[in-house]
Length: 217
Image (cartoon, rainbow, N blue to C red; front, side):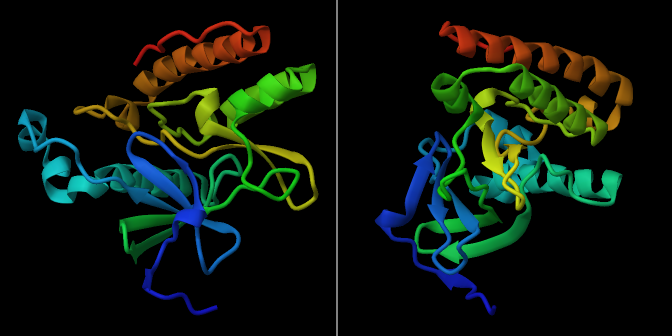
């Protein structure tokens, strides 16, 4: 299939949105999504002047850092870890630059629900606990850095055989000025141990219907 370098996104294609991006169904590819960066609300401040990445990439800096971490995982593993969606580059849209990513589908064929919503709806069995642990094992083995590793950024989809699949779809990259975790294995191991504990604690809280707490950075 030949893809157009520029696409028009309609309001009906909006599937989700966060503080920094809109997520649209790709109008030309059924199994792809387009994440469009929202315009900056405030003028650049001191952090913009101090961080070269912010100066160079502007509103697409989040996409740049996310893509960089994706490429790093590919370089370390040789293949893309199954717990990450494929990223297929960028496209111009009528709303701005968009990142084209793999659409993780749920059992009914629509967009997969977040792990947070899935646990609220279905509950937390031992098999799902084990699968959460396997997700974290796979991320650690690939040394993936995810500044926002929470059940809200993990979706519950299905693979081609119809088996349940957990995928980290957002919050990728190291969101700090000095990226120690990206280059120090010792720092990464220590940091990920804390993230693992926080993630599993939150999974437990969701299953018990308790309020979430603000995670440590």
